[in-house]
Image (tube, rainbow, N blue to C red; front, side, top):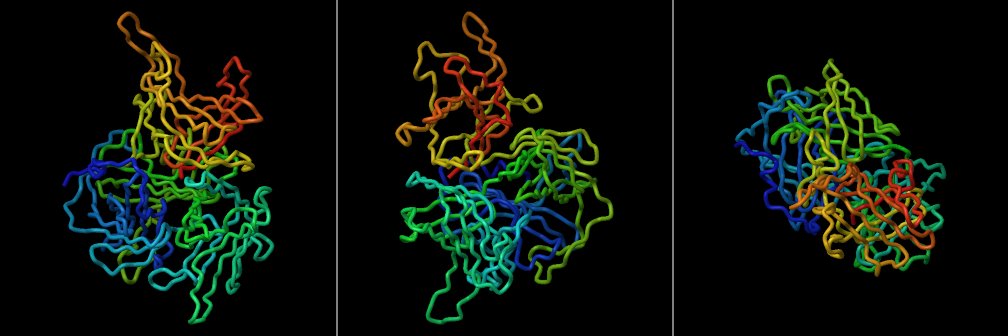
Length: 540
């Protein structure tokens, strides 16, 4: 077979997926050794991309891929494909690899966004959960994986913003660990992990997470944390462990979970960090290489999927931190002598003696460059799939128009200092609907606005231009390069402000807009940059 991942995505849906959605990022089986195998999952729209990084029967590292949909009952099943005859990711002349004909399949069953099982080609299912790194971890017996091992969740200390598409309500939690009074997770044997919100708007709200089984046969153990709002909110909440991730979690209202809030971890560090996802080089072929980037807490993990000097699919791994300017430099190791993900006696791999160096320089949260061992930097972009895409000539990568996803939908918004939050709905509109004759400059532009009826004291609009020139019947018009979306924000009682969204920051899951003063007459977008005040939006 000679198929590209794109072949799996011919029939796309931009509707919100109602099926169980596994958490984006790295997953590991409960028996995985220190340098073992794992699964990478990313979902956009109703499409899920899967990469399996593991080892073959000789212990040599290999990676495999699959794509498809998660069914209504939480099952993902698809052919597991292996590629060969590819080129290394830094090669100046890339050519497409091909797929082996294979009867291998992967089946994963998800009981929630954080836990599930995985089976390759009919092997006994193995318990797995989303991989927590960069945080202290807490084990609870009240939520168990399918093999009976305790579920491990990341310490909840930090700032979270929560919002509901149904009620249009939102709130911010700034959680500190109260179990020991020192911000350190509970020692083994403590019955409850407790957190207190110190945010002014939610002070005295508490989160309590049970850790031990009751031992009582006549009572059900509590497989969720509770969020007690102390009467200052209309509901208390339950946070199911199986929906509690290190970057995102779900809160269910006590009343049978009829109302749900999604909560997102806020990175308040002063740095430029990459969006999580599968990143591809601008010259990548239909069946090529890529880099998986995942950031948790201070640390980022990079998995480089590529090919060795004889075209065999291999992977390398690096971990480190992005600095305030979006620069990352870390050793890039190649593990070998491991065992296949389905092995009943998994073995830890060891790193090859030769170690490379991976350098990534971000230009935005969705765009950057990469280099290995001093190779010429290559442009890389977070890969978009399964959703409707648009392009702009105001930002180009390797002379090609930059591609970005739609910003339509429901979002929860939080200010840069986490002092305020709100839920907004962005809808598409065309400025030429309201003027005649039409303005050629905004042909093909993507424009979005919030509804005035949702919050008359707060609204904003954005316009993202597409074309740089227009050839009319009598003249050719040239327009200035504007490598960002522009708009206006109205926030009573602060008044009106100009705002800017960089194209290279527009992600499917999240984006930011920066804003500055508007004097009522003149716009000055050049004065707004990454040091300006901003609001961050997370897709609900």
